[in-house]
Image (tube, rainbow, N blue to C red; front, side, top):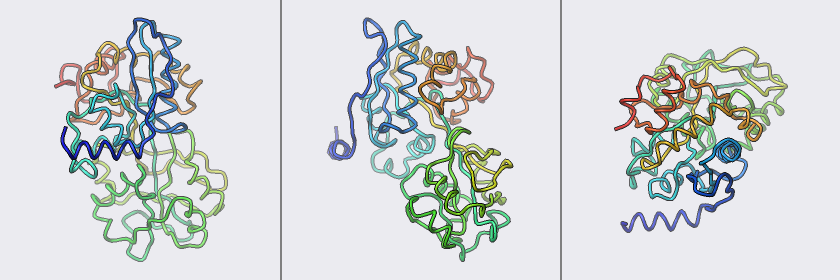
Length: 341
């Protein structure tokens, strides 16, 4: 292990809360899968907890062990170093790791994890004060303060990526205030356009809900201009979607809006047992009602939803590919034969 890797591991041990927080399932003679997740209350934590319960109820050989490991990037490093079987990570983090962007520049992930099945989506769209809302992102100017998400958050990473690829990053005034300050800023007119976030078609992010409560019926959706649409179409980590806004009570956003979805998926160690990966993938499909009892934001179990997280050009784990094939997924361009290296 290199000095740089040792230094990074020491840093992670000081920044992360790492430890087993749940062990359930058939512990006698079965296969134990260790899933790396975020802190309690996060999407990956809830999704893993639901899988653990489903494995306990419905599998004769699988057990799921949950470990809380800080940030998505920290989970990828732990996965690469053999400390986890799988990790819950958003596709933006996976994409950045595959391109050696950000923290992965000086310390690339080797080998890259293999893709699995989705456990949720982060959905994003632009909103602005209705009285001065631009016709589209093409109408944004340097006189307007645009909030692309709080720095360091997953919503910020993908939105900044899209703005840069669209050539808009340097043509607007980027606002970097924390999410907690947005309700007051929008109410006072110091933020002209911002990203709203909701999860898996079901719930509005807390800070977006706070903006709704603060400004009342003063917001409107902002559609995409050609350059932003083109950047989104070319982004491997985000999916262009017409999104039905949910959770807005004071704001009237009833029609589908231009938006983008970032899948969150289970990424697997290349050495993970293929039969176990396939069984857990099928379990997410066959017993989605059990998952929903534990995780209100669990997906419905349709094969297309589970496979929709696959990033083209990156390896899919053999076990997941086998399960997708068995479940009849038609939502990806790859086949079982070419899903693995």
